[in-house]
Image (cartoon, rainbow, N blue to C red; front, side, top):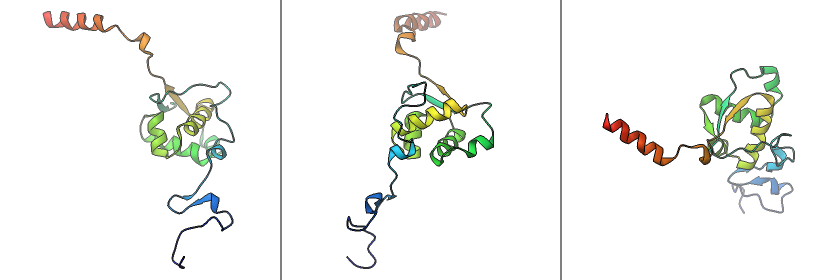
Length: 138
C-alpha cells in the first residue's frame, strides 16, 4: 500500500468504524439510542404515510435539543411533504431508524403523520363505475 492510498485496513485501530467509500460509520442503534420501536405509543409508520411539519411546532429551544438526524428529517419535511420511504432515501438512513426518529418527532409535536386510507375503507369499484356512467349520461 502506498502513501496516497485511502484504504484503511483491518489492522488499523478503529478501522471497523470507517469505510473508504462512505466515510465514518455510525451504527443505526447509536442513532436511536438502542431503540427499535417508535416511542412509548409504538405507533406504526407505513412506508407511504405522509409526514408534514406540525402547524404549531415546539420552539427553537426544543429543536436545539434534538439530535442531528432528527433535525435532518425536520429539514426534509419543511422543504416538502414526504413519505416515510422518501425520507429514508433522502436522509440516507435505514427505514427502521427513520421510523424510530419520526416517533420521537411525532411525540414531541414537531410533525404530523397522515396515514394512508386502508383498502377496506376505499369506495367499491362498482359504485365508482356507476357514478362515472351517471355523469356520462348527463
